[in-house]
Image 1 (tube, rainbow, N blue to C red):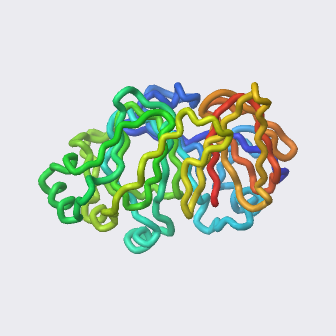
Image 2 (cartoon, rainbow, N blue to C red; image 1 turned 90 degrees about the horizontal axis):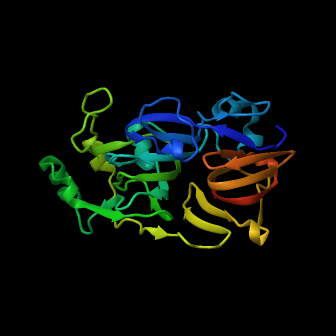
Image 3 (cartoon, one colour; image 1 turned 30 degrees about the vertical axis):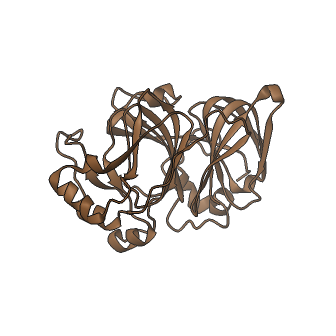
Amino acid sequence: MDGGPLLLQPALKVKVWGGRKLEAAGIPLPDAQPYGEAWVMHDSATVAAGPLAGRELGELLPQYGADLAGPEVDLGEGWPLLAKLLDASAWLSLQVHPDDAWAQRLENEPRGKTEAWYVVAAEPDARLVRGLQPGCTREQLAAAIRADTLPQLLLETPVRPGDALMLPAGTLHALGPGLLVYEIQQTSDRTYRLYDWGRRGLDGQPRPLHIERGLMVANMDEPAPLQHHGGRQEQVVELARCAYFVCELLQLNPRAGDRLRRDTAGRRFQALTCIAGQATLACGPGELALRAGRTALVPACAGVWELRGAAQLLLARQP
């Protein structure tokens, strides 16, 4: 591997709550179905150009593991992080994810799912759920589920572009209608639905709930606060940090002659998703043009890389 940047083609997911906002965000959609998720960095994301074009990241790991992901990354269970763009055109289910210990105990899976959200776009009055009302007990949560009154216990919060939120595993959460969100998370799709607004799936059948396990893994602590970063002018704004990932907002202003340099130091991959404007990524022997909707992977072996242009990008990496 020569250390050049890899342009990634996302894997698209049709969802009952999806819509068409991904297309407006720069990701072409192949048909008229309701697309809710674009997995822009994942085992299933495909290299879009160059000598590795057409191959999925997961397929490349056995051959290029240390150069691609980094010698410090445990690749025994595949690509460690998943980055998504989500179009919430209707309420997502009220759901909770297990942490590592619960995932291993309940599902024999190595990873739980801690995640973070960054609001890219929001319609007026858009809201999300970021936990339960303060003081709610597990017994009250179980009783509300049985009585079909769970929405009364939810901590709903209005949101706007530039908001960011950490969601540790165990936090009950849901995105509301009118949101386009970037999500960075541990690679896991294990979800326990506790409530689904009485709707049916795309197959016309009620979607399954996972109440017993959801109640087991739910965290009853106070949820993390919402942080607003809109209007900040710093070139680098840290949005989220935990043991699994770091997410940063990169802002380039060409009038100030902005360039941004980073270094993988040969240790770990870094991934860039452009959400506005245009930038050029110089990495190893190659350059890559990034515009809204495009994601590039900087291989661990790249070393120093540079961005220039007029753009906002989200950087995901391991700490």
